[in-house]
Length: 273
Image 1 (cartoon, rainbow, N blue to C red):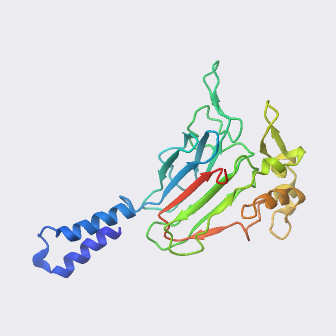
Image 2: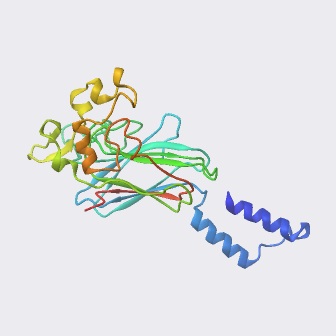
Image 3: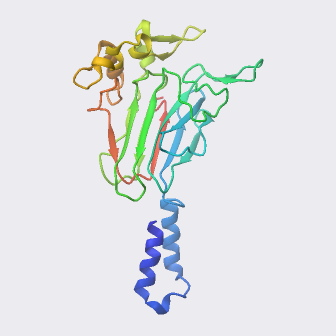
């Protein structure tokens, strides 16, 4: 890592006779400050903030070739924050989302959520993804220190449940702009896509693929290429509310973001509230 490289540079600069000396206090202070800025191992971190007026239960799922993070699900109260660290020695890909309306069944002891439930019966998702509809944050990190680009986005391909934003911090290359869906898609959800709670309120909005399962809406079969699968009247509802988010499978041009060298990614639920 960078701090170790600085130590080697100091040793070389002072000659062989200096190898057994104590590092001067001024240099030690600089190294300590660098350690604090870079983190103990240079790993990228994910910082989660719940700006919603209600609690959420965060879900985390690692990609098939990526190791799991320290937690795959956790409770996040309104105004609360939390953090997860990515691996320090390899690339990493995965997704994050918010579950809402969660509770434990007093009869069975099983934990479940009204939206984006991962079906484990527990707060931890343990390698299982969310049930749609769900607003997803998708991240692919380059190997730390490689200079490669990270890719990240907000996807509504599987529908919408809560507004969300992901923003890199400390990046030195690429656009490094926030990706977000800050609009309330539930408020403008077409009647045939709505998920309605027992109270009568709309708690999520299905994608047309999830609602109807047709190849046209799912971009599969004869529609399985970017040229054959364009936006639909349904996907345009999502796009009008959240122009920077994926609204269908091939909505890449305005929805994929890149950054290199970011020290953290800040994931905020209900960023506009």
